[in-house]
Image (cartoon, rainbow, N blue to C red; front, side, top):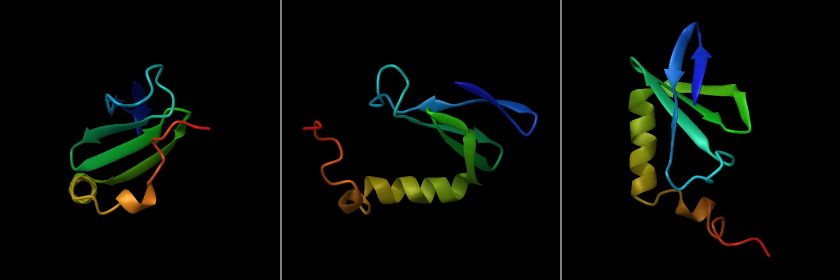
Length: 78
């Protein structure tokens, strides 16, 4: 997905595990020291942070620090 952010076209990437048709995804792009996140279903809402903060967040994810917030979220809907 390409989006124009502050006059710069950015190429956003999504996780391979995201929904196949591009819905239910968070896309991430980096430009310089800034990182941008958007959701597939609302690409006009852009979250901006630093690459460093994003890396720290990703490290926390890898360490399982947020697992308790999403327990059961990947289970099939009943």
